[in-house]
Image (cartoon, rainbow, N blue to C red; front, side, top):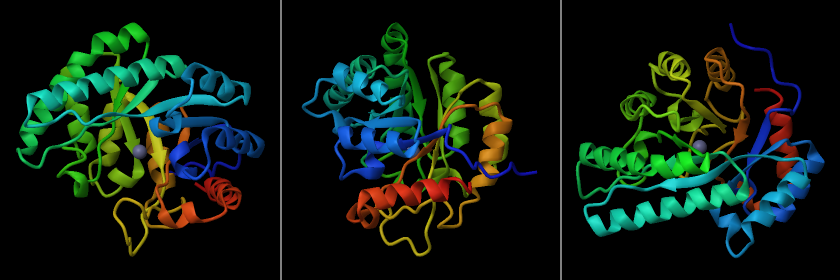
Length: 276
Ligand code: ZN
């Protein structure tokens, strides 16, 4: 049976990219004033800023810093570029440490010039290489499987089953999975794989938005929760039944909503969230 609607905001987190037109100061001020309790910070929001002070500013607004988005993009046919990607991930670990969050979300990458199997192998090698630094900094790495429409260049990990396989192979307390309903809702094995992930203590993050019909842009036309066909409450029920107690993170890329008055948009995020 599905859980009851949420009705309160203690687990509501918003990604800075959801309200992209706001800088991180405005995002923090407005989230806090609206009762949002968590923030996931996209790295572009930190450009040119003192990261340690930014982390303090967020905590001063009583916001939990849920994660840093994003590391990843490991695969490349060119070994030099793979090294550069690893360096960038090391930088992300430093940034997460400075910011004061314990989680980095990985969009793992893919290179269309090679097979998905080769890309997955390079992802696994890349993550394995980062584990010592992640553990030294006290930061977990969450593999986020992406919808297969992004398998060409954004991620060769497209199902929760593949992400679970990889976390089981890597077998580290520092590596787990981010479940994003936008990417995984269609998967007939989703309930089973969420359960498996929970048993591994590897369910680290839960991202929500909705799938609109028609979707006019496969990156930047995501919907508010309840606006599309994703059974979000059912998936939330599975995630919570698997032992997940973390934040529900509203992550919406939308050219349409970015054009709106962001205060109005935030009100809609909160109203729609209460019904998930
Ligand atoms: Zn996500």
